[in-house]
Each structure stands twice: as C-alpha cells, then as structure tokens.
Length: 554
Image (cartoon, rainbow, N blue to C red; front, side, top):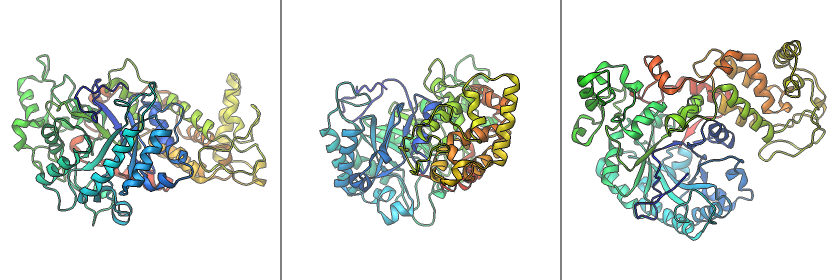
C-alpha cells in the first residue's frame, strides 16, 4: 500500500489510492488461519488481528503466539485493548521493534462484553472514561513516534506507525449528538483516525451478540462527523453484509453503479445510476436523492428512520456523495458467514484487472496447502511431542510416507493417475472419510489437539453458503475433526476428506459469480442493507455451535 500524507497532519495516513475495505477484528475468529484465508481471497483488503490485551504483550514470553505473521501477510492492523498506559506503551514498542509488517495499531474503545468492559474496565466503557483513554493513546503515540523504521519498510507514515481508535457513536444513556461531538473532539488531540461502529452499545442487559443487532444503526451521524472533523479520517462499521452495500457507502450513490440490493425490494426506494444513460429515468433519479443521505436533506433520515424502514429503526442510507475523509468501510460477520463473496474484492472494490482466485477449488487448495505446511501430518511418526499451536513440531517425513487413511487423499498428488486409478482413489477417499480405519498411531495416541482442528476448519465453514451440500460439508468437518482415528492426518487432510465426501466437483470447480452479475440475478432473495442487521444470525449461530467457539465481534 502507498501512503501519502497530503494533509499536513503527521498523524493522518491519507491514502492516495481510493477507499479501503477492512476485515473487522473478531474474538476467536480473526486467527492466523482466518487471516490467511482472507488473504487468499483478497490481496488488497486490510485485515485486522483479534484484539490483544496490552498486559498480555507486556509480560508475554512468546509474543509470536499472538502477533506471529505468515509469509504473505499484506496490509495488517493489530488491535490492542487495555486501560494501562505503561502496558499499552510497552506493547506498542514491542510491535514496532519486532513486527514492522503491521501498518497500524488500533486502540479498542468498542467492545461491550462483560469480560472486557465489565471486569477489566477497558473497551467500550472507556467512552465514559475519556481521560484514561487519552492518557493511554498519548503513551501509545509517544512510543510509536520513538520507533523509527528502516527505509525499506512499507505502510508507515513519515517513519511512524499510525495510531487509531475503534469506537461507537454512544454508550448506555450517553448517546446524544452533543456527547458524540464532545467525545470525538477530545480524542482528536491524540488521534485523527476513527473506526466508527454506527450504533450505540448497552453494557447492562445486552450481550455482545445483541449489541450487534438490537441498538439501531445511525449511519448519518458518521457522515456528519466526517463533515464536522475534516482533518480526521473515518471508517464506517456495522450492518454491512455485501460488497455492493460496502461500495455504495464508501463511494456514495452518485457513482455510475448498479442499484444496491437493499433498494430493489421496494420500488419507491430505488437508487439508479444518475447518469443520463440510466434506464430508470428522471423520476427514479429523484427517488435516489430521497433514499440517499445528503447534508441538504438530513432531516429525512432520523433514527428511528421512516425512510429506510428497518425493523429496529436503523438508518442505513448510503451517502449521495461520500465525504472525502470517509476513507472506507469495515465488514466483520459477513467474512465469517460468507467468506466466498470476498473473492471479488480486488476487482470490484479496487479496480484491479483480476482477482487472486476464480473458484472455490483454487481457494481451498491454497488453504489446504497452508494448513499442511503449518500443521504437518503426525500419523506416520513416533515423536511424542504434540501439535497444539503455531509453530508445530518439525518432524521429518519421507515424501511417500502415508497412513492407511491419508494415502488415498495424497496419492493423487504424487503422480497423474489413470482414469481407473482416479476412480479407485475417489472410492477410497469416501470409504476412509465415512468409516475411518485402525492404523498404527493408535499406540502413540492423538498428537494434534482439537483446538488446532477448530482453528483450522472454522474459517471455511461458510465457504459454500447458500449452495447445495453446505450443511453436509459443515457436519462432515465437525465429525472428522472429532474422529480420533483421523485427526493425526492433520487439518489439511481432514478438510480434503470433508470436501470429497460432501461437495460435488461441479460446485467446487464452478467459477465464482461476479458481484455485479449476482446482484442483478438474485436481488430479490439476497440479504441487503435495508433488511437491517445480522440477517445471517441463524446460520452463524450454527457455525459457532458446530465448532464450539462463540463468535464475539469487538
């Protein structure tokens, strides 16, 4: 990424290359495995780590466990949580000195969970303790400024890493416009980059999942902040489920783009292309102005919003013309529920000539290779060490050394099989994946932990969202990951077995549908911005149940 600071403000990393798409930090979701999958899908999106507590980094003996990077990382942001200035400063210095690939450090003032904002007194509760937040941010900024990077480093502004804040538009009863303006105004003395979750949070009475859906969204307040603080950068987060909605918000509806899904369900709310060549005509263009938010008609969009017509009163209107300092948008749960839609990010959002992958087979083949490199097979060794985390024990294996279960999986990769051999291999895969086998390592015990299996398989559970075989695939992943006869073959082998026994080759090799084409063909049935928040709750709750890890987005 090229950072160009044209504003004269040393702390504002203005990007002279259009808008940005960020993948939100999600606790127990934004793991290294998840980040690797998202990087396979998109080289240009900006991916966040899950929140790391400052105390953990300040006293941790193995920071690689929390901050370790893979070979191909791309633009990354590390999110820190805490309320202790000294510990936060120490965490910043550690990251600056040892992990220069991080382009930015973000301070969490957004997470409303009882464990964070209640017991530990950081996260969203700091919106009520602004003096503490300013003290921590000032120390983070001081430590970042004191760490200089070599001339070859990328992603830094004037040799310094960027310090930003992720927060909300209100908390509990502190939710009026005057409070929000005062809150941001005080923080601008130490920070000029804000990721705004466009809804308030309630620390009592709502859990983290409910705080992502019950309080109404209020996008216009974020747009107004952009105009009120032109020297600051803002990013909008919350309730964005599709790339089309993300682009409408980031660039505004005055661009020559097709109508968003959210507008097509109600003819009176259409947002057509404003260009003369638009097939909708002048009347629809006038309706576009009514649906979109702009400063001259802001009184039409008040929460509860009668124009957007959402169930909880949210106002999710995209701007007619996006403010120049609305630098981008952030998507979180959409990346967990339906990661495959991000295959089109580089071309659709950033205008690249092509995307990294064309179909799910290419994506999952790269991901399987990553898993096999990160967590090698343990089915054919006699080493007693366990694979519980990254880095896994390095145990040499001969190239053709396989057990009875993984041999039919990997045999096809050693040489080009004949048609008869291919059919026989497929039959063996189905037999192994469905029945398992008694193999030698039963004497040595299971050497790959269930946590490794969960971390490896959870990111891809939504890869076949809304496609035939999706539920069977998720069930097979769960069953095979818990099968002690199979686990030592590694998560890469388990994923290949699950695919072979649940997904048809036609679906696996079928090219992705471009975002523009998908909008026009399935606009009536796909989730949209106007439907409000968390339209995929039923499916995402199944994903968390099947892997026994609750998703908590901060």
